[in-house]
Length: 92
Image (cartoon, rainbow, N blue to C red; front, side):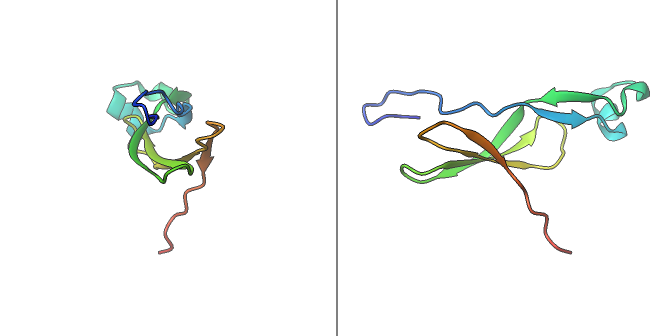
């Protein structure tokens, strides 16, 4: 956040997310086949930020390096609470 006087502070930190290692990810990361099915935690990589003056901030993110499904987070600027929002898939 940036105050009116120009002071900068961290609004929030997105929590790590649990990822199940797929065969595709194992190949991408150079891991052995026996690692498939294991779970690990990854830090979300912000890809976009939107918000208005005084309202919540919305952050789109993807799990680092996985190419898996994107996420959307809502950050309450007053409480700094971070909430992961459900992402709706388009109907085909």
